[in-house]
Image: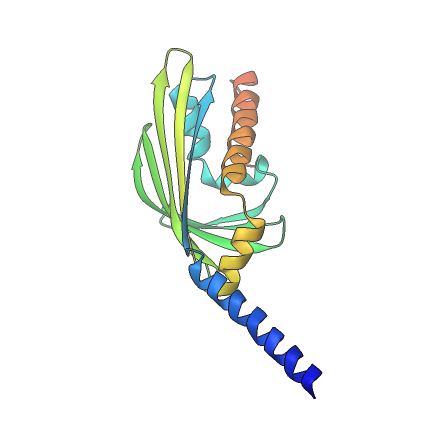
Length: 177
């Protein structure tokens, strides 16, 4: 009997600590990364705002479904697991600033801000991703498995490869397949 009581007390303490930890983890995170591109600002802008063609060069995007208004779309990710993310253009000031509202049902909502500046050697971009986890399970999962800085850097590396591909075939049509 004493052993069962001790096990129950220890279980309650572990659960209680878990709840306290989850409550102390902030729901909203913000990550800012600055990345340099060795190409003119208009070429960087062209790739970053060609939403519909991202399936051609982003490894984790299985499909993009544009809304008729061309200001919102849904991306279905293939990696690490299928998830639909909705995007809405809040601001698009060519070729300097792009602000998107992001959301995935019951998982997160947030904002993506991309600011581009011309430099002597190309373009410097500052990317800020703000996300708010919706619920305690998404909050825990995002802390354990999502590295926002790595996601931004991977996206930029894939964008650089696409910019180079487009620059190497300047007279070819760059529309989606």
